[in-house]
Each structure stands twice: as structure tokens, then as C-alpha cells.
Amino acid sequence: MEDATNSVREVILKEVPDWDSEVTVSARFKAFSGQRSDWEPRYQFWKNLIIKIVRHLGIFIIRPSVVRNVWFNQGGLVPLCIDHVLVEMYNSGDLLCSSDLIDPKSGQLTQLFHKVRHLLPLSKPAFPSEDEFIVSSVLQEKSDEVVKLISEDHWTSSCIITMSKFQVICGGPKQASVILSHLFKCGRAKYVAIRRNDLIEGVKVSLSSKTISGATSSDYDILHLTWTAEKLQLQIDMIDQLCNKSKTSALASLKSGNKVSARRHARELKLSSERREKCDVLLRRVEEVLRAIADAEDSKEVFEAIKSGTKAMKDKMITIEEVQQCLDDLDETITSQKQVEKVLGSAPPYYEDFDEDIEDELDKLMEESRNTSADGAAREDETSSGTAESLSNTLSALKLADNDVTVKEPTEVSNVSKVLELAPS
Image (cartoon, rainbow, N blue to C red):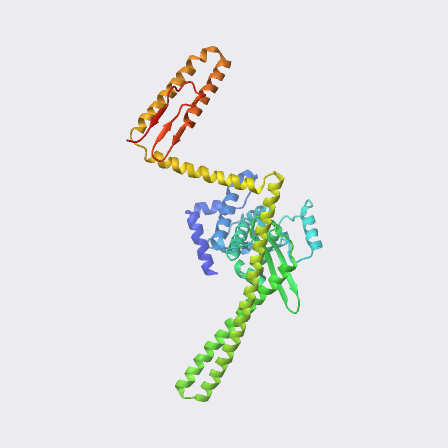
């Protein structure tokens, strides 16, 4: 608690350098009065400071009593306006209480009733009497961070993880419950449970922007296998601890000369090693099955993508041959472009003279265009069109080979009267 208090003070002093000033303290700590426009700047100050402290501490659940009496306690003096600030934050949606969240574990009827109750006017109390509130903006950031961490271990669009692992990623059961409720509200997660001899709880999470689908029989199988794999891993860890303990005890007994005790510990070590090997074999089998399922899911998504692409091509009346032809044409264009760049890069110095000839030809064409501009707007449009066509045909007549560059006179162009043949000396 003391470390958190010190951390809060560091943030406050960083954000508010004059925090300890007696003049500013009396002005900031007094209660709100008058019109909202009179205390709006102070409200924004306190709200932004609370959110910055929450982000710095890495939390998103706050207690008003802690905010009032610990965070902003200035030698026994607490802000008289802080309760008003929290009320305004709650009314504007910056703070949430637990009753505002949907319980993903509840039934569909309860969830529907919750949605309808919050859609009714005046359904939200002025300020709940609860002592814990959730900072909505930081909750959104934390939820995105959790999804990102989960996606680092999975390459499919959705995945199933056990509730215990989800709680570890979220930072605890309470945080996991709030984050799961938020993701459920956004359509990015669903609660999954298998009620057999042991209650197996899990979460189905969407790792993309798509809304998560309902749990299928395959999802329940994956949850059971994942839970089994984690249980086997825990068993292996416990056996490793027993093996280390038996090994240490056996060595100590040998050093003390107690061979009977050493044999007993050696026997325990052998039995523990055998149990570990069996658990390890089972774990590898379960992991192989999970990998096979993941590969199948990945292949299914690829197949669905190909199927959607095929349907789109049929809808647009495009065949596979036409697509391949477009790709081939694109490859030829890229190859030609590379050849042009190669030739232009190795062109001889007198190629600049050829550029000057082209510039002269352009000047002539522009001069002709200016001379015909007096004939009227219709004549000007016709001349400009002919000029552009002449230029296009002239440039398209350039043929670049490996060792020579040739310019041929197109039959449609009347402005070019001879053929220029250029070859490197």
C-alpha cells in the first residue's frame, strides 16, 4: 500500500508541479459551487489526474475512499470536491459500477433483462452506493492488451483458453471477471463451461475484429483437452519438485552414512521419475491432438477464403484463366519495366541529344497549339486532342533493344518526317 501511495505521489508531482503550494491547494480542494461553467476547469483537472494515476498504477478498478483519503490526502486535508467529481464521471460514463456489467455466466433471459433495464430511461441511479468503480477508458485499453497477449500464442481468428489461464493473463479473478464482461458486451468473448465430475470453465475469444460465434461441440472438446494439458503440466511440475527433494535427501543420507534412508529416497526418486514419464507421454499426445485441431481449423479458414474468392469470381464473371492471364501480363509488365530501367541506366552520353530532339518536337507541337487557339473553343479542343495523340504515338514508337535504341516514324503522325536510328558507338 505504501509503494502504491509513493507511486501516486510521483505521478501527481510530475503532472502538477505546484501540488504542494498552499495557495493552489486551497483553490483546488474547495467544493464545487455555482454554475457548471464556474467549476468545469477544476472538474476536468481532477478527472484527467485520476485517469493518469490509474494508468500509471496499471489498474482499472478504484475505490472512492482510497481516491479521497489516500491518493489526494494533503497532510490531513482532502479535496471537498472529489465526491462530486466521481459523480460527474459516473454520470458521463467515465466510471462504471459492477451492476452496469453483464455477467457472461448468466442465462440468456437474465442477460436480456439486463439489457432492457439499462435501455429504460432513468434506470441509472444518481450514484451507486458501491465502494468500487471501473474506469471505462482504461478497461478498454486493458481488454485490448489481453486480447493481444492471447493472440501471440494462437494464429487462428478465435481460440479457447481455460478460465485459470485467462485469470492469470488478466491479473486476477476480479480483473478477469470485469474484462470478460466487457469483451462479452463487445461481442469478442463468450463464457464456455463443461459440467461433468469437475467444472471446467473457459473463454472463447475472438482474435480479430469479427464478432465471436457461439460455442460448438468442437469448442467444448478443445476446452477439455486444453484443461487436461494444463492439469498434466501441473502434475509434472509437482513431480519435478518431489524428484528434487528425494534426490537431495538421498545424497544427504549417503553423506551421513545412512544407507537405509538413502535407499528409501532413491526408491521414491525412481517411482516419481516413472510417474513423470507417463504424464509426459500423455501430455505430448494431448498437445499433438490440439495441434492437429488447430491445423484443421486453419485449413478450414483457408478453404472458406478460397471458397469466398471463387464465389466472388463467379459473381463477377471472372474465370481462373483470366486471373492467371492478368498475373502473367503483370509479370511481363514488371520484366519490361526492369529492362527499360536497365537500358536507361546504361544509355550513352549522346542520349541526352535525343532528349533535346524530343524537347524540340514538343516545343513545335506546343507552338502549333498556340497558333490554332484563335480559331475558337471547338477548334482548340480538336487541336489539343491531336497534339496529345501525336505525342503518345511518338513516344510509343520508341523500341529499346539490348544494344541499340530505334525511333521509327509512325504512319499516323504527320509531325515526325524521318526515322532516327541511334546505336551506341
